[in-house]
Image (tube, rainbow, N blue to C red; front, top):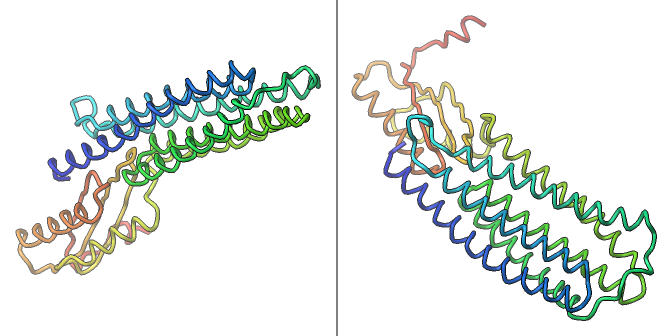
Length: 309
């Protein structure tokens, strides 16, 4: 891939990820302080726990920033193909943190249900209920904001951070239900909500983990992306047929290997020019592609693999 274009693409991704991460850290710090104050002042242990969960989001966002920063480094002697997979490592770490958060919430809920001593739960104040409602709205908004940025730059680490925001929103829903239930005289709703939320968080963690692992094991691109690349190749003047097309994911980037057929009577220089046009066309039409390898065959070429089979 063109070195300057690759650098510009990487810098653009890093800039967007950094901006989203800084906003996320700022929101989480303010929300953590507010929920901690509300939990202590309104005597709500559920809100104090929710504040701790928000504090964990600050840690997760820092992991994202590190992952994107390291993943965007230029190739070096020890990593000649780049560092993109470090972003997947960050996503895996976040998945583990997310699963751990879900386990803590679930354990607390199950333990309370097993003990059955619901009358001992103190009635929380109205401020805790307000804090839970504010947290739901803010964290759900951060989920959609971060998720949109993750889609724009195709970042698995940022996508994982978005789901961490969603897990915090779900946690706040549980806190809201528990606090409201306690104020209405049904305190058992608090632990029940915690267990249900735990299952949602586990599902999100499993999806994030699976997506990161797929990107680290040379999985092929989705059919839509391959079809777009094939269309770019076929539309190039001089290409008579696509003999082979292989793609693989390298972190959040794509590697492409293509074999094309061109007229066997043209010069080597002209055949090379066709291959270069294919290369340039894929670069422009699919910017997430990091490396492209184009092999040229004459139109009367017979695939040796097909002959042997």
